[in-house]
Length: 124
Ligand code: SF4
Image (cartoon, rainbow, N blue to C red; front, top):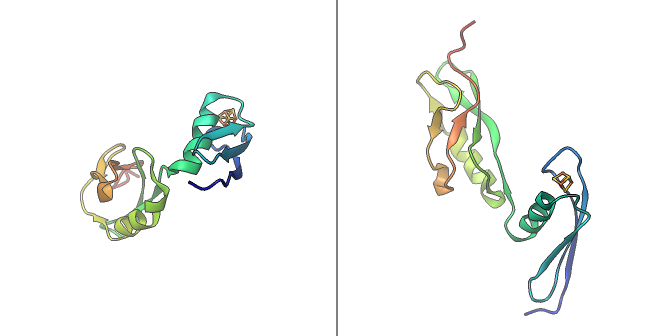
């Protein structure tokens, strides 16, 4: 294993406080997070250097050409964001949808469902 110690400065995005984190990884892979105000920041900082994940929020095309807001129901690996976006861009939904409906289960085998955060058709 390399003797190199890696250092990263990050901004915690778990809550609006936005604490400045310093994350170092020693030669044995032990991760140390400082600058966090709470335990959630330490968890976030460690995940960012070991296995970063994000909840994907976007829109999906509906049958009438409008778009519906959607998101994944859990965070997915950051490195899969573009492939999941491509998958979503190929979807077209042709059925009535309400809040929380699953648009696509286990999208690209991420373990996350794509769910609606809006309704269609809209009741104007
Ligand atoms: S470390 Fe805690 S308090 Fe600071 S931004 Fe992250 S979640 Fe918020």
